[in-house]
Length: 255
Image (cartoon, rainbow, N blue to C red; front, top):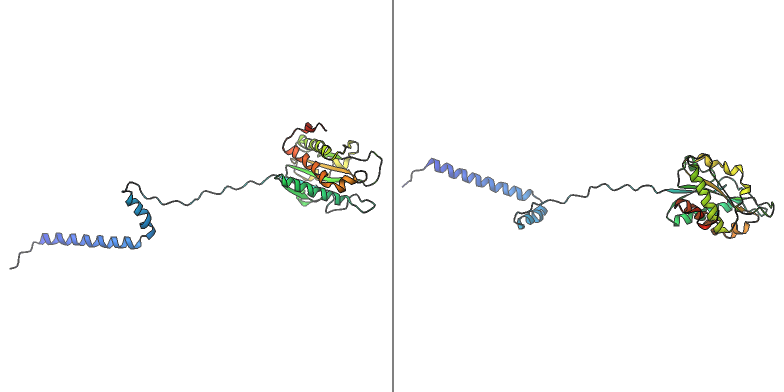
């Protein structure tokens, strides 16, 4: 016997069946399209926690890397290097040789102290507008015998810089420390216009403190200049450090 069919009930069961089929399809698509790593880690952890914490993926480190600031530099000029021999002795020893040896040692000593140093030629193109903590040009005096008083060193600072006091202080530091390190006397009476008006003073940036040093006479001071150049270099290095580190110029009691 055929039972009568209720159209409304049949329609209800059809709707339920349709919803179940749609749900099964959506679940299948979600499972197949979702990366396994997310299901294995993120969702699993969230479910294990009882739904108390939402899964938040880690963000990449997108903070910009700080740009390092350029380190201040010190300029050391090897007098006459790259241009001419300078003073020449009878045995062909040249001032340029002495200057370059001492300047190289000063460079190495300052680098060992943690500074960046430019070793510059006499007419180096980098001198134009040169900016530095300090500039020191290294020279030596005549190889000719003048008299028994023609011994010792000289220092002259740049004239006309925007901050004359800084160049003068650099000069004072060099006079103080160089005398102690070398035992040479300061020969102030023979400072010439060529020193006070040294060409590099007009080429470098006006805020760069600068000096020119005559390390000794190639006649009477030849022994220390040629046999103990490291001692001479230490005198210049100590003077530069005195200036940069703002040490007491009169710390040694020498001027």
